[in-house]
Length: 407
Ligand code: PMP
Image (tube, rainbow, N blue to C red; front, side, top):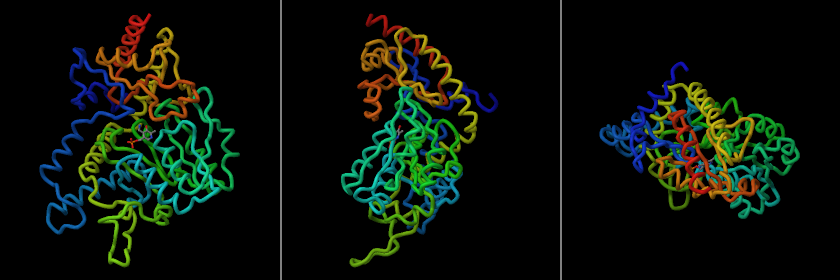
């Protein structure tokens, strides 16, 4: 594969080169949070060693440099997702905050009693709870697109669920619990045909394949830095300019205002209106470094690696006796969720941990989709650009060990 050498990629991630529990570390939990390349770690250190100061308000050289770094990061994000205008990029803490921001600004302004919010059954709690809360605050109704037994959306149900009362469609691009890739471009087309705006949760998508928000056509796109090899505590809300312009502010404080008297506040322009207080400067700098790292590999190459490894892993896991995959969508990305015989996922995870293998077990903050599959929890191995066939082979050996212990 041109431009992508996984051995070289692994060398960029210092954390991977250690032993845990007396074994070489096998990290298969990147859907929860991804590891950081040296380039990101260096960018954070460099920022604190050379450029740290508060942004926007200072006249001194360090403030100028910090502002340049922060605003430069905004431009890097714009380029990465191909937004039209850098002002369409709002820095937030992560996907969770991005969705809460839209629910509490766009939602509070445009969604009232009897209106409908449409989500899907496979959403992460971050794309359920903010809408549930909004519904409780306003008397709106939460509607749900069902999933089938493969873990794909029932697309035939969508048109009837997009009604004249639907005020927003909020949908994930990739399910963190199943790995399903959702056809968000097609859903956006259908929603827009009825004048309904669309929010896409891109938390599990941006790390795996190229994302172009103009091509998707969505109104909002949310993602987290920490899942795409950047720092925690930084994320992005992309909003189409006309949508952002029409939204009231989110939190109040410094930087989001133009002027304040005790009687009246004039709010700042987009995107600063939504960024109250001192922002996560080093987070933005680190996120920009992560994006440059991904760009240096090429997102098409990353996507090809991820596709190839997922196919290998799917086949390898299916060879394990008693293993049942949860989520067998025709298009998947990055995630393998499964049950092993009648062994509780927690026990699977604990025994794998003794072998130095990190996976996640539980409901993956997606309880409604677990309920659909009638399981309280699954074991989930998730793949990233630094994972290899050897990691998958180690997982398979580990699962055989689990079976030996329990049977
Ligand atoms: N949506 C999806 C699909 C996710 O996987 C996650 C994180 N597991 C989130 C939203 C929430 O992201 P964060 O915790 O970074 O805000």
